[in-house]
Length: 324
Image (cartoon, rainbow, N blue to C red; front, top):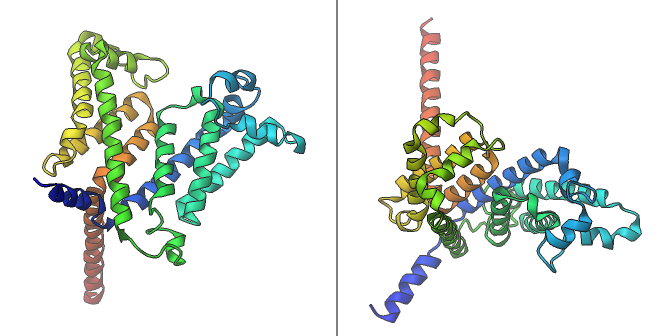
């Protein structure tokens, strides 16, 4: 294989124009997840991120943030002369973040809203990193792709107002898709390899501990003590699904099966551990990266079936009416 052949294949892989609908879906779903997170956190926002919360700023600013990068503590210090308290800064940041997410949801000034949401989300997380977990990481990733990619070409007020150029099919969309796909592969490969080095994932203890923790245990799973093969099988399946992601998600023959396995795995996490937002963020990322064509086909099939049923019942109703 010559260098020109390799170059042309790479160009086709990364630059063949495609629809940006998957990215618009990712934008909308990420905004919804972000708003759901805000709704969940809002009653306790000052306890988690406030200056006198569970971990006070005097401590969190020293050990619980990315060093030399800004947080709400620095923003509060800058606004101290205005008389705004730290608590007001936290509330204001969350309010602006929610407004930016609403703008991102409906696609109004999408790029600006994505930038604002991404920056505020980072400031909030960097104020007290210990309270962030998987859902925050993957919401941040979704905001990043909404910021850089052509995410407003479909289902947005910007597209309706003619502010996007109306290029739903573009090379930029393909580049965003490939980068997202490679990103997802890195995420799952890293997770699978890391778990593979842990002894508890081979013995099934990891699943046992996860489901038996009072914080995450939704159901009484103590019966697994009498059937350890269940936790061992679940652990091995997790290793297989995550470790094989980078291999089996690319071929078209194996992709739908592997995608279904990944989605079912995250659905199981949601049901058994109550981590619905985290599972939702992971499922959204997978659908956007590898499953959009299947999701679109399924949606079209369901709509056609529903439309056909309504037309049939309407037709039956009209014939009865005429007959009577």
